[in-house]
Length: 431
Image (cartoon, rainbow, N blue to C red):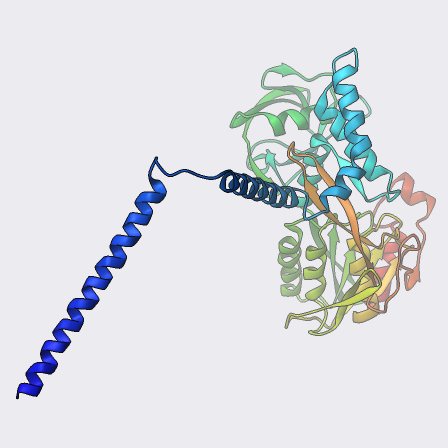
């Protein structure tokens, strides 16, 4: 019993000692902190020098990381050497030139010249106005009323077409109307681009058009809304008891795939036996868009096209479960370029379709874009694209399976009847 009491007393004593030690350590730490922050604390010259050097190094490293972030990780020394003459020239002009200098224009011109000097037609700089026009086409949308206008032989602004499901289509505006006033302002003698620019940039919710129709003037008020530009149209032809679907693609914008699929499903609901895809005078567009459209026809795992970067090739294959097996003819001409050539070559070499018309343009490269702070963009070539069989069409074009040149009569007065390429495709698919 006494032994047990002794052990308990010892345990209590140990706990008490530990607490005292802990308090002592805590007190020591507190004293050190007080001493460190005390105004009476004196630093040696060595301490001050060490702190100064550490601060300078830390600041330099921080600036280095910031500069690397801005320059995309480029070597600072190399970059400074490369840009020495540029900076010197910029400073000389802005500081010593006798007249007024637009600094932003200097920089824009330098960037434009840099991209132009590469010698690639597709590596270019586009200013803000050019960028807006480019993005309107490529996105397939703009703020407006939903019609296209043209200037006729009498210098009148005439309504050329009205887009489906747009404010213009819901109004009383008609194809052939001559627009003489816009929001009460006389547009006589102005051209169609003046009118289009005004409607797109005007901030009012409505626009009032005064049109002349059958020698009578009429005012039409139309709302301004976001309008989707139609890039796909369709119809059907019948020959030899065969129903042939026809789809024309004017560009491969961000809305084209959805428009194409809607038209295709409608044609298939009408039980077409075959299909004509017309990409004549289609200069291309988004790579993703043409890939998605091509995927509608190829089988899963089949090659759509190939990409080549620095000698390394990558095969882009169909990853979807959808495919078709009816006969297809693609109409091409010298104006069919880029994405149009990807579609035509994939359907020719992988699907086994006909290609009717003439050699395509021959653009076998892929571009990317970068937006500048003022809204302008630069476009630059990053890759080659190859056909499924590895052919490069650049400056050569895709050769048709059935070469057909248009006759002189077609260029004077183009109609479906004298369109030799269209009629040849109908003939092939109806047999």
